[in-house]
Length: 355
Figure (cartoon, rainbow, N blue to C red):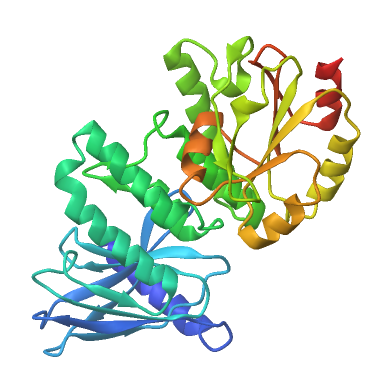
């Protein structure tokens, strides 16, 4: 009874607002589903699902919905009534989403089209279904998540798809776990802060990333590398502008302090940072660039008087994990003996630690 009331209310609300508000379309067909009902559902920012519309299927299995477009990107799903089978898809604004499937294989054999994000989500769901039997093995799960990070999260720029993947559950258990997957939570939270600072999911992502880091520290019985002192740094070996690899250990711990700087040379705030770095005396600098455009990075790096190296897409996850990077720029001070001495949150802090 409760779901019927929710559906009736949602349908009435849609009819009252459809004349003035922009809408998106979800349409398609479900084969072998004559007389069945499909339900369109939407998730709120806390992950709770609610029904917003339904359609009874005829012999052809065709359906069509035209809900009000969301103010911000949202996750929706199509459910076969009377089952726990779902097809998930994201909606940014006014897309025309098309779903094709059949009743017997509703959540396992389907296609979703209409946007790159929708197609990518369908591809992820199928990868997850295919890999699910092996994910009980810790090594298989780690390798799967690394692959998923590279394919879907690394360059997602705060997309709703990255949030969906990071909060995905499998058999009632989260795919990405706290504290084991702290670097992934930190990376996605950083992307949201940079590209979607007003997204309502950001506070939850930030809180989860912080909790994951703290729990990881507690479980290890010691501080992570970003908060450690008097310990050796993790070496970095990446190509410079001339294509030759340069190791952090080639310059660090050689009788002078070294700044390990992670930055994006194309960021509008970076020139001011570089101007401050130029003023420093008696310190070496090893600058890792996370720029999207390697050619633009090379041109900018050529004008800097310190060691600049480039982090490719394949290098980035390991660096995020090793140094627990949550935002850029990030600056680490390695002392003259080669020990990681401090993480500095500002140039004023850099100068204080160099005294």
